[in-house]
Length: 245
Image 1 (cartoon, rainbow, N blue to C red):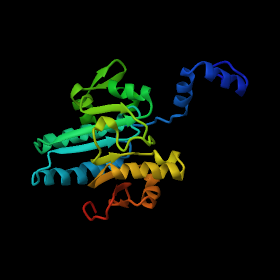
Image 2 (spheres, rainbow, N blue to C red):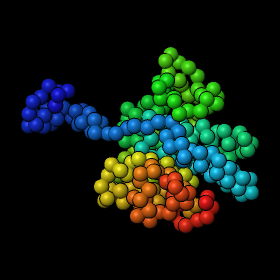
Image 3 (cartoon, rainbow, N blue to C red):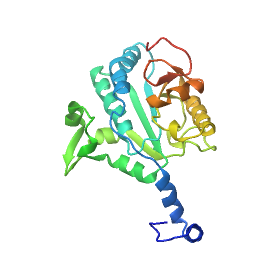
């Protein structure tokens, strides 16, 4: 109402009916789109030192040719790009031919546009390891831009995780993700919406798929029927396993 110069709720309601574009602005103002590179140091340490080495060593002994990842509520793409850089490093380290397909979604079109650009101010680079800055970024003014290979390795698109008409994001063709990264989303929803999201994510996980969430959401996911497999981190699978303990 302040932005539109209106004083009364009824006036704002009338304004919205006459200006449909204002509805999008109102919804956008409700969105919380915070993210950062390598957001949870424990999670990324476990991915780098434990989970990914285990996967890539197994990959040499199996016929698996693709690893599919979905970054949910990706905001401006920092977490999706963090995963992309990590996988790129391991593909080089293991001289692997496996295809890594990373899909990243958010409901906010403006954040997805920022993610596709892959341009980040210096103050957002604090958690990025220096080796990654040197290898995957180049300076552009007062910001850093990701190199094309990493930008092009992530498919960004808008998607509403609460959409009842879709089981999986249309852009991903089908579900069956080996890794789903969905950090600090559940804390903003009531139990009904949480369960809806959990069920959709579970339907999109492979039989041995991994779901990573925020540390504060651990109890929510365990109540939703998922099993923590890497205490004390918020890393889950659908079935109990000793694989990453």
